[in-house]
Length: 134
Image (tube, rainbow, N blue to C red; front, top):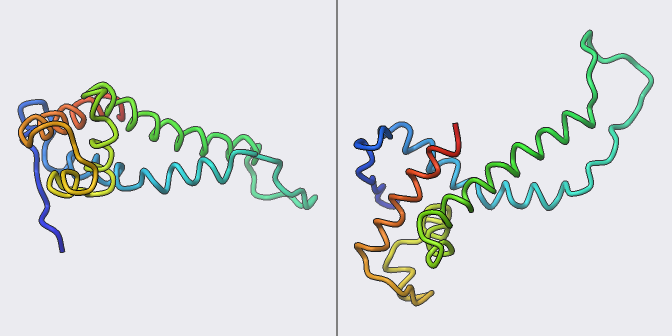
């Protein structure tokens, strides 16, 4: 199991549990993005003519609401990365969402900044993401 890195974010009101929660949201990035692409066309729910429960609801609206919620998470991750450092947002997403370490990024993607600058941008990313996702 790879080592779990923690960023010093307690000064910004982000404790270890919240940091784990943000990291878990980031790890779902690919799944959320694919869900969004797979469900681009919402369509209508099948009508069987039989009542389903006692609530009055619109299944198409519920499905659309679910897609929008996932889209908002994807958008928040991307916007937080751009806010942290527009030139490094691709690398920040690779680090936060796909667990690429700095060394992996140097070897495979030729990252244009040093270790300290990169991880400072990743810290800023988590700070912005915390403010965007409530």
